[in-house]
Amino acid sequence: MRTLFIGNSHTYYNDMPAIFRDICAEHGIDMQVTMLTKGGMGLDYHADNEQTRFNILYGDYDYIILQHVAHPMGEYAVMEAGADRIMEWIRRAKATPCYYMTWTKEGDEASQPEMSARYRRLAERHHALLAPVGEKWWEHIHQHPEVDLFYEDRRHASPAGSRLIAETIFEALGI
Image (cartoon, rainbow, N blue to C red; front, side):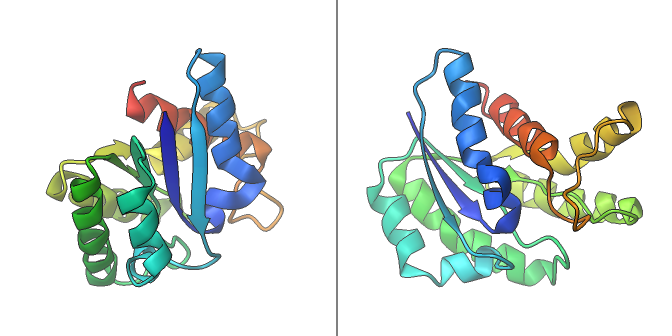
C-alpha cells in the first residue's frame, strides 16, 4: 500500500510519516510513505504546486493525507479553495482522501472547536475520511498531563505527539 502526506511542519516533525509506516508494520501492513511538505504552507500552496498534482495523479497512492497550515490557520475560504482543487486530482486518481485535523497552539485550546469544524466541514464536503488529531490531542493532554505532546516551541509535536498523530491517522484509515 502507498500513502502520500501533504502538509507542512506539523506533518514532517519527527518524521511522522515514518512513524505511521512503522505503526502499519506493527499491524502487518506493508506501507510505503511519501510526503510533500513545506513549513508554514497550507493546502492553497500545495494546490498551486505542480509537484502535488503530478504525485497525486501518477503516484498510485491508496491514501492521501491532507493537512493545512495551523498557526495561524488563516481564512477558511483559502483552505477550502485549495482543498477543492486537490480533491479533483484525488478523485481522478481514485485514492482515498483523509483530512489530518491539527491542534491549536499551547494555551489556545479554546480555538480547537473552530479548527475542528473547518476540517469536519471539508471532510463532509468531499466525502473524505477525517483523522481528528486536534481533538484527540487535547483529550490526551487532559487524560495524561505527564506526557508532553508539545515540542519545545510549544506549537509542534514532540516525539510522543507525533506518535499520537500517526496512531490517529492509522485509526481513521481503518486499515
